[in-house]
Length: 169
Image 1 (spheres, rainbow, N blue to C red):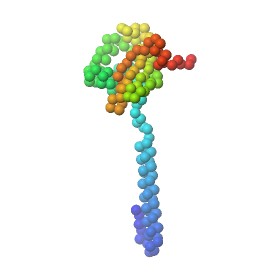
Image 2: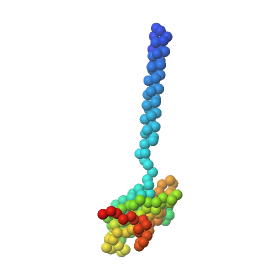
Image 3: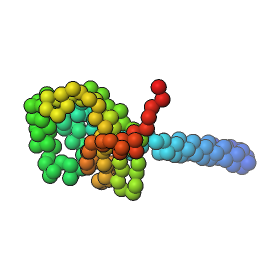
Image 4: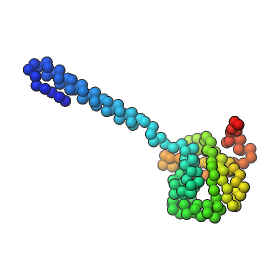
């Protein structure tokens, strides 16, 4: 706060009041800016769909340590990241698995569980030699406040229309 000695008491009060106003205004602007910064959704929690996309991107790129971050303890079968990663590296290598692309659809959340459909375009030398699209359904659970993939299943027949809406051509 700036206070100047002046010959009249009124001038001193006026200078002090202006200094106080400047300080209050500066503090107010700083508080306003800090409030805006705190309210900015810069790091919103990932949705179940975000989690499936991140997992599939990591699997496509064969970054199994990254993929591991998106699976539940149950899906990891009590393996640590290194053991799980080695297992999937072996599976990808021996099956000559390739993920070409994926299309994640809107999921459904019920409490602490979510179901997210996905169409996977991939190929391997054992189960999908022709590279046919696979209609998958991922079940996610909340662990530590984050969505984690807990199960993956293939959706067949009449169940496909329940999860995969027809796209306009």
